[in-house]
Image 1 (cartoon, one colour):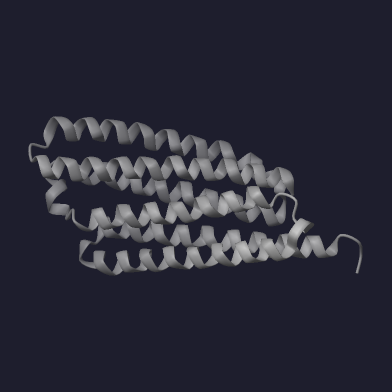
Image 2 (cartoon, rainbow, N blue to C red):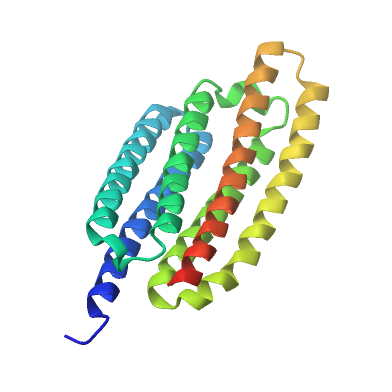
Length: 212
């Protein structure tokens, strides 16, 4: 066994857990999008999102134990843990947004013309989280290349922000039902928070890549 091999194996194990966490976030956001396109399966999709969130909590606990066991073998474990906790927060945010979306059936918002912007926002979230997933996977292949993937994620976040702001204005101007407006506003704000958090996670992943 050559010098440094234990550390290499330890890093691979840790990065595999981060990859599993991100994969679950992709699954969750796809189920969230499915809730918009097929409201009849909303309950089923929501339960899948909840299950994925619980899986990520389990991954994070396993990661915490592994990092504790490895001690000083992993020098940037604080950065890795920060990213892992952020992904867990992302899953909780997706789950909470999905719960609210479950209360908002398409017939309530489609008459105001919000079907198209909601679809655009969720499509962009899927694209953004898939790119984050690719960025995490790149840590195992070529950490230096992971940094190059950040601008694309930043670009999608800006697109989401533009659509979010315009849709929020449209909701304020057109939705007369106060309860419906509050629910739509809450969902839109949470979608924007999801994109902001994904961008923050990508920054954390960049820091992790520098330490590998």
